[in-house]
Length: 166
Image: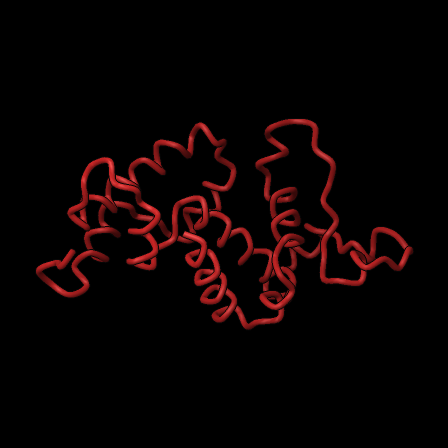
């Protein structure tokens, strides 16, 4: 899988699959059936730039190129938003956007003493894909060692963590 120009695959990949952080804020609200065509497009682009067969498995290709899959990119941006909230780097309008578990009740449990947020109850699919539900849910599932990192290291280490499982 040698390409003619070093770095060529990344340039071609980003032309074929333009994913920007600002665009992902709106993509988080997409339902699964709306994300599937975008995932297929990303997989086709990966196969194209690596000159792989049309039916080749893409996980090893993502691992080799150290690129995130679309779904993991959405998770990363959601977790980054939560990290920004946790460290107090978001605008003041977001101050009451999420509630810490320790502020919700007085019982001193293991879950409440960690850096976790209250996950609101949902009744609709809209609620399931909303960042007010999805953000705390993903944040609470994230390992504590990532939560204390600086924003740059947070993204870098979480990206490595996602890629490790491909």
